[in-house]
Amino acid sequence: MVTPEPVSSNYLIFSDVHLGADLVQHVRPWTVSRLKQVARIDRDLASMLDFYRENRDPDRPWRLVIAGDLVDFIGMSIAPAASTPPADLTDEERLFGLGSTCEHAALKMRAVARRHGLVFQRLAAFVAEGHSLIIVRGNHDIDFYWETAQQAFVEALVECMPGLADDAVALERFRARIEFHGWFYYEEGLLYVEHGHQFDAMCSYDHPLAPLMPHDKRRLCWSFSDILLRAVARPTPGLTSEGHEKWKMHDYLRLAASLGLIGGFQLAYRYFSAVLRALRRWRSHLSHKTRDIRAEQERRLEEVARRARVGVDKLRAVAALWPAPVTRGMMRVLRSVHLDRIVIGGAIGMISAALVLMLPVEWWIPCASALVGAGVAYLVWSNRQRLLDLDPKQAMRKGAGRIAQLFDARFIVMGHTHDPLAERIDDRATYVNLGNWGIDDLDDAAHEDAPRTHLVLRWIDGQLRAEFCRWDRDRGPLPQPLPSGVSGSTGLG
Image 1 (cartoon, rainbow, N blue to C red):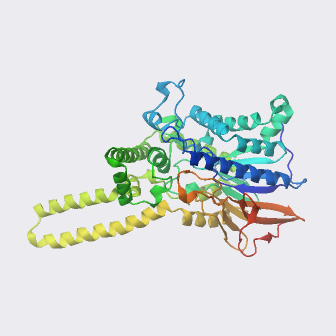
Image 2: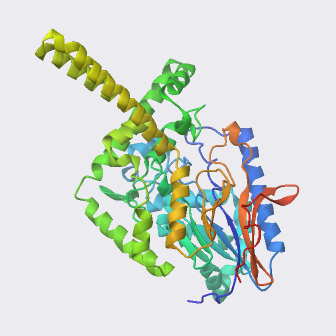
Image 3: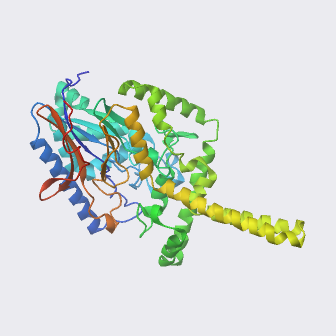
């Protein structure tokens, strides 16, 4: 294999493009406004890639690091092809589109490449000019776990470069400049990049390096957020991809009423079906069949440690910071969808009825008071836990601080939350959240303009200059505020 020569690089880092989020025609028809938004996102990203290609250092090629959710495998809904054998489809896939097998992932990847040809052309030109492309896996592009999806991605880039396939040496060098990382990308002394979804209980996976279903290893074991996105958010007009995080039960009831009798019934059916799928995920991980998956997770953990040249104990220390996925417990699932209150209320009612039958009258008021007090205490605790599960920002910031202690890196970089942020962790390291470049719900008016934020690390006169920028389609990159002492030369040389 031909490998690129090791050279010092400049770095361009962004996250959350969500290519393919527009491919939901299986459950929601195309709209003119959505097509216009997609075209605008593609043009903006293409123009940014062109800008940095044209403003390169001839001695230091760019290393483009995309910190997860480049492709929205989870959010897209593509109808199975007529050639797909019915036996290879689950009921869920017939309803909501191609699922998570390696074959489905490759088909989705090719559909995204066709739909977003302009972006793939610019990425291909970027790599062909000698720059590197690093894809870090996020929760929406967990399908990059499959080599078939990775190969389909690379093949789509190759097809954008006429004649490249005919030159074996050039083709091998082109492929060698594209890397996929299942957890994080690490440059010792400088940079640690991961998507950050493992710090989000709604979006995390029990075995992120081997995210397979215990009872069907041909398919990926989706997080609860994935299930809700596919089964509830995408098919429901008026419910955005971030709706569940912000909505309470009365919001769902109000939406159901606005959809009419049939629409409300369909929403309720999808909602409770999604909850049942999540509960089945919980039960499946209690099975002995998870032993093979845990063994594969450990094997891949050691593989990641070797690739990053760090001790596996450091990786386990980071993993210990992750909150347990919502699908780890029955009550965690029910709490995240507001149904735990019904369960607790029913339990209190049954206990109260039993006490009325068993105890004398003088004990009724003290027991009722104790039960009400316990119910109120549970509600307070439940609300706090739900907020923690649905808002991972603090967990990510705390995790970044611990990562800075474990890894020799000046910049700890994540994405996922779509909220750009740059702040000092200590006198040595800076935490950067890249925000989002694209949007994962083209019907969400609040997300009409993504921040287009990205991090640029550039060597100038032996020093590394850090710039946190927002891309403007008319003016180019606009530097955003960085913590004191971070903007300008960082002192690295």
